[in-house]
Image (cartoon, rainbow, N blue to C red; front, side, top):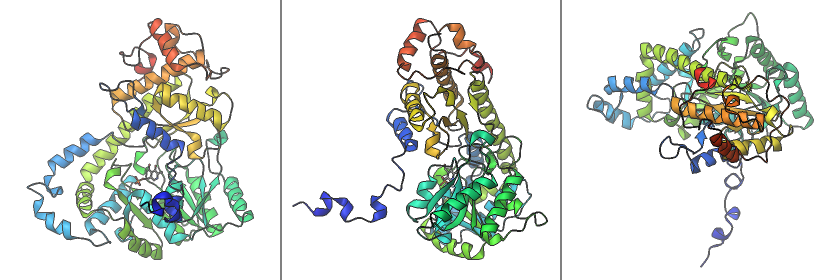
Amino acid sequence: MEFSSSRNPQQILSKIATNDGHGENSSYFDGWKAYDSDPYHPINNPNGVIQMGLAENQMCFDLIEDWVLSHPEASICTPEGVKNLMQTAIFQDYHGLPKFRTAVARFMEKVRGDRVKFDPNRIVMSGGATGAHETLAFCIADPGDAFLVPTPYYPAYDRDLRWRTGLKLLPIVCDSSNGFKVTMEAMEDAYEKAQEANIRVKGFLLNNPSNPLGTVLDRETLRDIVKFINDKNIHLICDEIYSATVFSQPDFISISEIIEEEHEIQCNKDLIHIGYSLSKDLGFPGFRVGIVYSYNDAVVSCARKMSSFGLVSTQTQHLVASMLSDEEFVDKFLAKSSERLAERHGTFTRGLAQLDIGTLKGNAGLYFWMDLKKLLREPTVEAEMELWRIIIHEVKLNVSPGSSFHCSEPGWFRVCFANMDDETMRVALRRIQKFVIFHCKGSDSSAAAATTPKKNHCRNSKLKLSLSFRRLEDRMAQHHIMSPHSPMASPLVRAT
Ligand SMILES: Cc1ncc(COP(=O)(O)O)c(C=O)c1O
């Protein structure tokens, strides 16, 4: 007998279970699927897709592995650490281990140059920043309420903040004319639109440093935002998950510094909350160490109760507390991490600049924001998606299209660079190089053209989407131009 539920699951499940609020159907996740079905491997699958759509930090695992090996007592599954196994296994307090909260608060201070203090009693655990943001949304807003969020923004906010809470996200539209600055005018405009639509705005979600832009906000903008939210009496939720990925000037300025500037600004601290995790700064997304840090006592208390749904395991707390309490290690890690991110970012962006491909000037994050507007057939989202499909399926790079970040201008792409080794990075650069040279130069496929790209060579050219990149590859081979897997002799590599 067939049960009715197996014929139509929509009828017996909840609205949350059957709506597509998870966002899995977006191009952002499609790119991941393309990678999953054909992943690049230098030996087993050298023509596979290279994953450049994942903001993962793999740059310093040598340092972390060394630390773990030289501190066997920090793990509970070693002869040196097993004496802590029982206490760790039975501990289940949702306040978290005091040594964990103290170590995380201290780490957050260090990352902010010791210019601010964090109170360990305000550290609340969550399952990654994903859990932190949802918890904050549950504490602050009711279904149907809205948060304003500057564009472009991290695609999974649509899932994290909206799906289970019933919250709305309303865009504050920013564009490249001023480097995607968040202006007072754009904030007021978004707020006014919400009022016209009769939507109650309860908060402002700010991501600093920004994913996808790779930029940090300046002091003036942060002050403007604090003035704005105080004026409207709405909450400010600051996602500072990339705070330690800043690799060059200007320094990162945390919201926690701005609200201490009492001579400059009047702020109701009850409106200020930070979402954080160790997923990016330490590269631990698998550990699910998320943090809600709120200046509002009621939010701390409510978030702590809610944290039962997303606690960090005590085993992870134990390890992280030991590691982050080693200040010498933390200092070395932070310095090396910035150094390596700066080098990787520089290699990629200089390589692209030599091809006259622009990137937004950035100094943070695990990615950069690449401008391919001049390769679009026309300035539309459809044309952006056509170009993106070529990049995924023919160039075999999973980069993420700007439209998936709600970018208001077609032609921008986020390119992640910290989730691969040096050799994969070189292969990725060679693929971009070949792609740009052939699509921009059209039939000019001489070997010289491949190694000495001229400035502005794409300025007036449009992408010929009918031209198969694979056919072009064949032509490259006929002209004895290097294959993506041969040793590099191009200016791109010399730039590294
Ligand atoms: C801006 C931003 N916020 C939050 C998250 C979620 O992080 P977590 O893995 O800690 O849940 C990410 C992950 O990519 C992110 O880029």
